Amino acid sequence: MMNYTWYGLQRPSVERLQFTTGETHRARSILTDSDGRYDYEVTLDHDWVFREFSVYSPDDRRLEVHRSTGGTWRVNDELRPDLMSAIDIDLAFSPFTNTLPIRRLNLAIGSRAEITTAYIDVHAIRVIPDPQRYTRTAVNRYLYESLDSDFSRQITVDPDGFVIDYPGLYSQYPHAG
Image 1: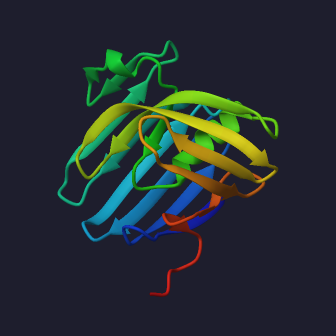
Image 2 (image 1 turned 45 degrees about the vertical axis):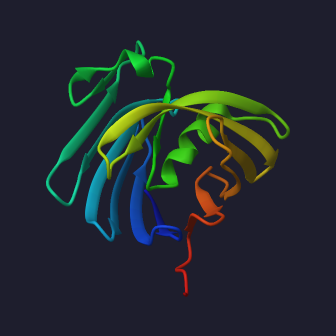
C-alpha cells in the first residue's frame, strides 16, 4: 500500500490517498476543502485502464462512473456515448488522476500522446469529455496540456508516476500563506 497527501494551492484542500496494487489497482481517498469532505474510490485494471469511480459529497450526493471493458461509459447508470473516446478520468480536484495516463501510456522521453478523458467536476456533479496532451520531457517530468483551453503545466512525478509537484495547483507540502 502506498500513501499520498496533496495540498490544494489554488482552491485550498487536503487530500489523503491510499493506493493498493494487485490484479486490479484501487485508490481510496478523502479530500477536504471549503465545501466539506469528499470520499472517493477509483478502480483500475492491471494495465492502468479506468474501470470505476464513486464519490460521496458533503451534501450526501453520490456520483458513480463506470467504464466497461468494451469502452461503454455510464454515469449514475445513464449511458454516456459522448465519452466513448475516453479511457481515463480526470478529477477536477485531485492530481491523482494524472497518474492514470502517465502509467498507462508509458511514454518515452520526448514522446507525446493526445487523449480524451472523462473530466469529473464533483462540485458541479458533471462529467464531460476533455481532450488533453501529455508530453514526457524528462524521466520524472511531463508537460500536461488542455487541448480545449490554453492551460498547461509541467508536472513532476515520483518513480511510480504519482504527482509530487503540480505548479500553482497541488503540492505534497502544506502551503504557508
